[in-house]
Length: 468
Figure 1 (tube, helix red, strand yellow):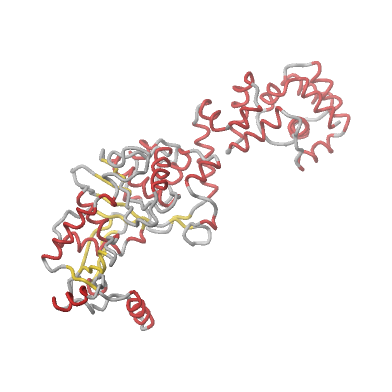
Figure 2: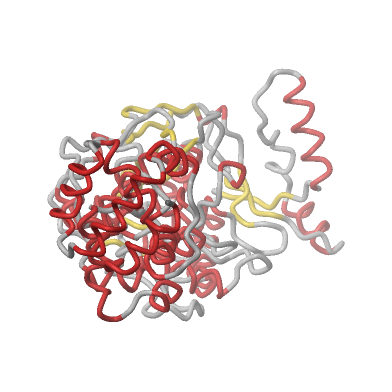
């Protein structure tokens, strides 16, 4: 990688809320830039006026900041309203480059209807040919063009692809890439309604904004030769491209709604921690020798584009949940308390807050789990699970009569459990499971001594009597 300042970018279209695939692309670009002490740039590609919404832009920026993915260049606030880094405000710049291409004969107006193009595509595909424009309008005379314009026809603008050329570039992920210009066909850079095409604005803005490296989904791989031809025709700077694998579900299909709700907003509402999402995504399609929990800065230091995989990245909910547990373990008590939410705050007495967090933190992964334990400790709505019921039934009535008697006299839990074991002749699982089951309705959970602190002797006695 060269010694010049590295500038990467994320350039989403604000037509919906951001999801895991989008955010992983942004994350990899953040990590690459910060690995080399460079800048990460956020650009909003909102030329689709009908579908682009300020609310989606605002939501995107809020989600990225929540995840700790900040930008050195880009929109200044979370309003989402168009500004210097929105393509909708850069039309005059695009027009300058349209004019430049026209003066050099690199483009031409195309009057072909959508119907004709659809038929052409269908015919080529049925013949086993790659779909490409046949150049029908490539050689219209000036008088023919003027006649069609006078008739009110609104042409698109096509880039005149040079014939017999090979477009080559070194992909940061996939190595040497070779494309034949003869397989591409003249492509549209401005639509008939005057709106610019993605190929054009995306490439022009990368050059104008000094972007040096672009990591994006491998579904954009075939866009790259088109964009390189455009930049070369305009003698503009070319970034280095890297095309990362797509995220797929267990069925091998691209991750979508049918695999679950993986919009960042939805995941935040479900209770996923930002550090969990970042740690998981940074390893989804990228290899880290160090598998420990890390901050964004630490992940950046160890990031290497050479470790980006070419094969589809398989989403694994178990791995995401693993990093959720890691993120929760690393979080301080105040963060955990706020994350648990109002429903838990309303149940846990102020003087029990510290003990509650210490007890449940290793045993939960979502706020709903915390609420479940708060209900166990501080209400009478305890639900006895099947395993717990079996443990209670096997222990028998006499066991719980002894346990209630001991807990009524002995405040120290460790001393009390030893006494119960001695009097009942039980030890190990046969001792601890029925006690835990009686006190919580579960056979697994927080340390028993922590349970005792939260419940108190009176409640422990009452629960033993209730099941006895």
